Length: 51
Image (cartoon, rainbow, N blue to C red; front, side, top):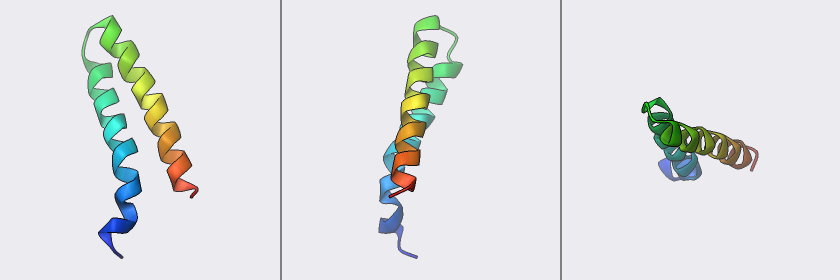
């Protein structure tokens, strides 16, 4: 097991974490942006998972 094998998962997970933080912040605009980042990050993560 080499750490470089998992570098493709770092970007989507980071995007999902930032999206979660923005989603929890109590402002409608940041919540909408956070939800979008969560959806985009999860789609990107599933795309990288299948490769």
